Length: 202
Ligand SMILES: Nc1nc2c(ncn2[C@@H]2O[C@H](COP(=O)(O)OP(=O)(O)OP(=O)(O)O)[C@@H](O)[C@H]2O)c(=O)[nH]1
Ligand SMILES: [Mg+2]
Image (cartoon, rainbow, N blue to C red; front, top):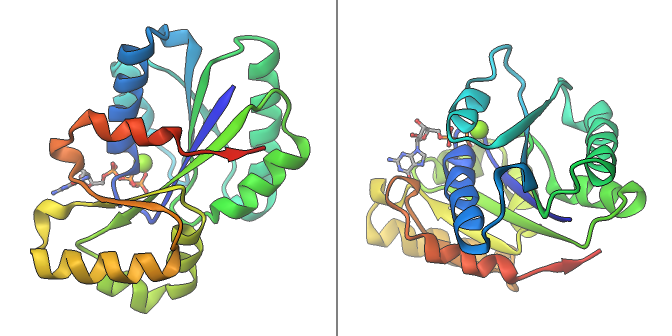
């Protein structure tokens, strides 16, 4: 089981990018729908994301935990271990709330997860709201970016080249080892997902 965690602030484009990755994994590897599971954590009452993803024919589970810091990780581990014993999916894509720190999730998975071969973190950055978010929640941005194996500067269709360059430079400082790519989830070349081979051993 390979777990891909999407970190990134609320509304940064995680679900849109997950859909693209799911298509890619199913297409490229001939994985059947049931062998790819998408786990969603919703703070809101209505699982809009789930409807969108399920419409695409993917197996989606929702974790009902209001807060990432306390109960969610336990819920996540229980669900992953259950999946490992039952469906045994090749891939699990997990979208935590936009307020989550992926490092904490990885720590818990390493400690209690079973059957996980590797964990990949994709950090999604909202190019349009970069300045605003780095000003309002610098620690969260830093935390989310620094855990990424792959950092995607999303919504690059909404900002100019100059801003993109400045964002890229700041990200490079926050996470010198990561692959950093500018993308637009609305018009994505799915070959970027080859980069998902960058991995962290469990
Ligand atoms: N212009 C533009 N809009 C985008 C892009 N990616 C996502 N969006 C839009 O941004 C909004 C949020 O996208 P989502 O994929 O739902 O983002 P998310 O990170 O899953 O959001 P939450 O789950 O609410 O935290 C949607 O209206 C998307 O259509 C992009 O690259 N360019
Ligand atoms: Mg979402």
